[in-house]
Length: 287
Length: 264
Ligand SMILES: Nc1ncnc2c1ncn2[C@@H]1O[C@H](COP(=O)(O)OP(=O)(O)OP(=O)(O)O)[C@@H](O)[C@H]1O
Ligand SMILES: [Mg+2]
Image (cartoon, rainbow over all chains, first blue to last red):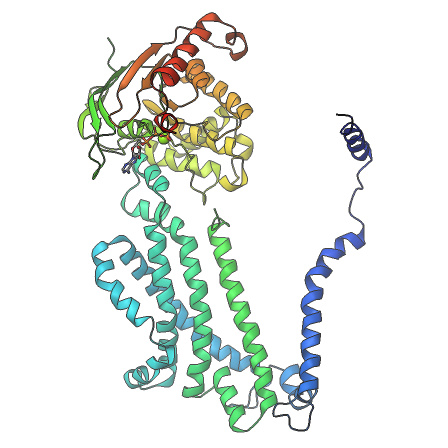
């Protein structure tokens, strides 16, 4: 008892001190620094290591300093356009993104529709699920020859490869979401007699939305993986072919710059879908 | 006698279970009555409530509400579920509004429905949080929205499944007082599941005590003849309150002790 006595006194003393109106500037900056500093430090260390490793006489890859020297105009001006394939990275990325956007949009529509179908119908589930389980393991590029043969043109073939790559996780996650509508929500719907289309729009779709967005997030990642590989084979404007072209002219610095852009765009796509998911589901995905 | 809600010879068995959970339950509830159903965990209280709600089919016997047999769920038997069951993607207002739009759109104009939603939110004192989503409010607040949603359907019977079970004692007492007030104000018939003896005695006109399952039956029915409005502080020392309380305790702990605990 005695040992505990001073504690409340100390606590009230601390509480009675007036609170500062706002945190001092240094204290507000600190969390930002703590977020930004570690990745910057790691990045600097890695670039230093790379510079050191690639500067030796037998090095096969260019060091960062040489990349900067060789590919300066590529880095600082992504928007130039000298006709043909001689364009800034922005135009190549834009072409790739357009293909991804089209293929992914088609996959979203078809994937959500099929997912809803096999999620709600046991017959469709039994009929289609084994087929999907086999098809989804086919690597994206294995579809390319077939789609080139079917479409006889590069552009639709590439879009088809995106479509067929990203549709599986969308289908599967949508179906899981539909099957996992909690019994509680179904009971609520039953008590207020929500049925048919009203049930679909007001209960089923919102309840499945977090799952659907998980599928979309996986799908967009796979799309971006697949488009680079597909473009290497089909040629034309696009970041994949840009890399392949640079390889053929032994322009390693261009490849490295392109890789960095590919990574950044892939990251942005992932975040974009995650953000869309949060906006649509009002952050209820977790609960 | 007024046979408002009539449960007769009701047995409920789940598929693949050899013994029924509830066996030959008979209970008649008057209009405006507040009935508490009490029993040990797992004896079949929620099952009984779900059959009244129409969410579960009766295996034998049945439930008749105002002369019509219960054949499925409907808004005339609004349920407040054990775990609130608010839709997380809707705000509190929208949760209540969805139920109102769905059940009263034929009898009320759009503007009247809006006012009616607000009136019910005010009844449970949740107007301030009407635009929040369920994950932004406390457990007690969620339960109040659940009650508002159920009341807003203008149910003939309000079915409460351990509505305050997951709440701390202070919040629970507060909500119990609110429910008593609402019952006095609206005169809704209430069937409330609980395993809190004080809650049953404080709120109910009649306490239905279930024996342990499987094959649970109504072991005893106790009339609580305390005048309303009831005040928890004044009642604590009231001999009638104390007597009712010890009768229920005696049933639960002496004559029908929890089988899980008895086995241990
Ligand atoms: N869907 C089901 N299928 C099979 N058995 C079930 C099912 N639901 C409940 N039961 C069984 O029925 C019995 C009664 O369950 P119920 O949920 O009605 O109990 P309860 O009295 O509400 O318990 P608690 O106080 O813990 O909520 C339990 O023994 C349970 O195992
Ligand atoms: Mg229960």
